[in-house]
Amino acid sequence: MIEARGLSKYYGPFVAVENISFVIPQGQVVAFLGPNGAGKTTMMRMLTGYLAPSAGSGAIAGHDVLGDRIAASRHLGYLPENGPIYPDMTPLELLRFFGEARELPAERLKTRIEDVIDLCALELVVEKPIGKLSRGYRQRVGMAQALLHDPAVLIMDEPTAGLDPNQIRQFRENIQRLGRTKTLLISTHILHEAEAVADRVLLVNNGRLLFDGPVDELAEGGSLERPFYRLTGGGAAPGDGGEDRASGGEPAQEAAEAEADAGAEKEEATG
Image (cartoon, rainbow, N blue to C red; front, side, top):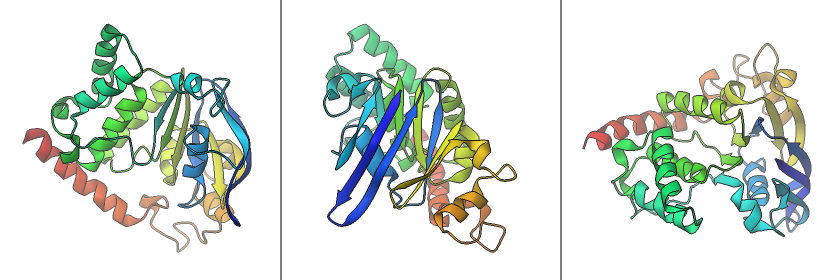
């Protein structure tokens, strides 16, 4: 379970997050939606104990993330926007390092490494330096690290960034499977990702929570685009003279980068 109780973060007069509260139960996948700069990353850093709030508190599986951080971390897998990646290590070395740091027994660690390598499709690059991997592969290494200790709660910040269409489809399948038993909070600004994987939406803008409820309660005509643009002040929705539908609010440059990464991954996996 993830719980936010009146979380706020101020930087002088600037309001990054203001008085956000919610509870996410076990077995629910929640999309944390908002435009870039809406406060999603700040909120996630407070919920994981990486950033102290100006007011309020957060809890993971009933443990306060600041007052009882070690206990909370045992139940938490966290994939930050830029994952905890050491470029000189291989994925295998990184997973062993984090597993030993978490004091996983040797046999369990061996089994879990095999499981997450398979789940995240890292077999072809496990012995290659992380610094030489494409953005998509580095993202998958970060995801494997977050899943390594089989946590009950997963918090992921833009987890599909840099993934090609095939990898995104695999990610969706993994999330749907994990969501049957785990609590997942996934931040994104790509609307069709939220539509594809989430049971519930938290929509934020300018540090404030604008909507909290089922995806189909917010959607109009099966799509989140019109309400998203209306509530966040983004102007016309795609199809109404706004930006391209395929991007779902994502800059076209990121889609091009994902395609380039797909080609790079083929080369590095065979090279």
